[in-house]
Length: 123
Image 1 (cartoon, one colour):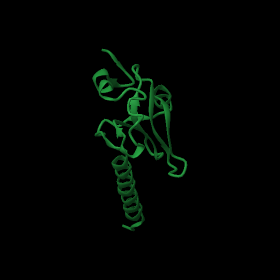
Image 2 (spheres, helix red, strand yellow; image 1 turned 180 degrees about the vertical axis):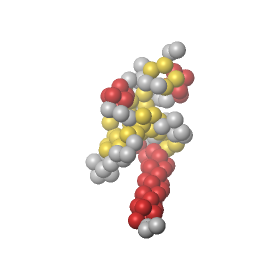
Image 3 (cartoon, helix red, strand yellow; image 1 turned 90 degrees about the vertical axis):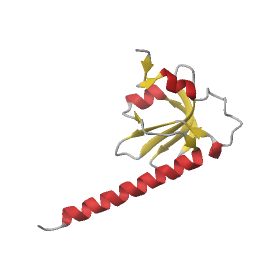
Image 4 (cartoon, helix red, strand yellow; image 1 turned 180 degrees about the horizontal axis):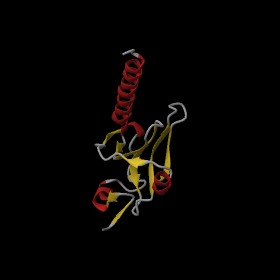
């Protein structure tokens, strides 16, 4: 089967090539994929991808909004460090992708708070 990085070739064909969207403002770039490391708050948004699917242009956030930045991302390096492709991700503009992340983090924070509260209850 012709797949690399657990991603079918037909998915890669839908993602713009490197530099293809360079004239699109960052806030409006379409984020086609999201990689993440569970439990760490690390995520990477992919806006452009080279033809072999190994180098991408996108946004990296290592759980620090102040230090998050746009740049080139090595997909094999992400995978070798435990990042996984979010199969449920639906492409959307960057500004909406950021809102989705904030909403996910808020929901996770609320769930963790509830879980902590429940564990402190005495039987």
